[in-house]
Length: 408
Image (cartoon, rainbow, N blue to C red; front, top):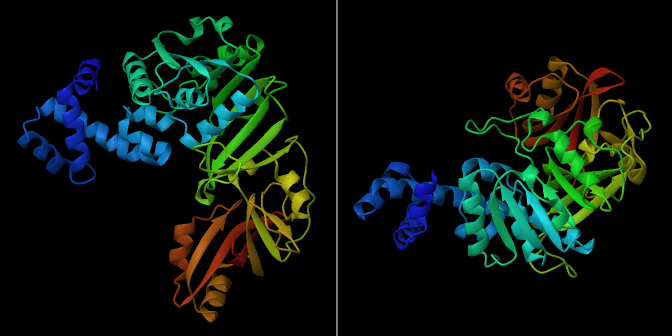
């Protein structure tokens, strides 16, 4: 899509085309396009409207009902923050006293809109003209145009003395191709500019990829990893006055629904785990229960802190499975009961599962080179029972644990 097509979607005819596209989206694209053309919608406008309808349908998982009125690009949607994460970040900024915020590289405006809804005045800067126009349109559609304004320009040229907080989500995809950028120095804005913001603005937050190398975390910053319903979605660096602890893992549970005392519009419970990020958990033998930590805990290097909470140990110092004598309730890990610990042998494992009439297996792995789907085929399962198989190492030796999951 280009600016001319976007402007066409903003006309009354474009709005009608978007409404028509929403009614036929989700099915066969050729059939949907034919339906719009038969209704008198020009081909170019029909294509643009159908693209938006499909993106809005996909965006519902991130933004909920608000997605129905948003304008989106594929790349922008992929990088946009989930609504529940953006709302939590906005509340933390507001609680810290941030009244004016610069969103440098605001994209489609997901974070800026959440901050504006929290009562923060947001100045968005976006280098891409189409994305900037869409962000402004999204602010208007949300009724927040007085709190979130967008300028198209270079984020590095924005006068940050105008605000008391900065949020920056540098572009991590190559313009034009959409391919991921793994070198932070190739981000836009570049990494040295991004990390230098903390020295210029008292409240600075930087959204980064979950795979960020811990060596790149600026001294004194709080590094936070966030998961939603067990899916690791992002990491963020909280700098200056916002830094509270060296490392934080935050687990958000949308499926739990809102809880009393949360702000209006909240859709998740938040479970934080904090620590230094450099502690080491004790190592011992496998015990009766296995804990599979949430990926945010693993990425934040907080497995040792979780081990302390659960009175658990590792069976291999390099593998983030924890073992305990009791099944202690925790939001930070899934718990399975171990029935068997075997040195890995395909022949022996196949025979044991056949003896127990196991026909369905869940396969988890850490520290194993085995391919789960190939193993599943090689096991030649038959039977009515189910089991969980954990492929791992114990004291460096390839091991398989036969388990049964416990209720959450």
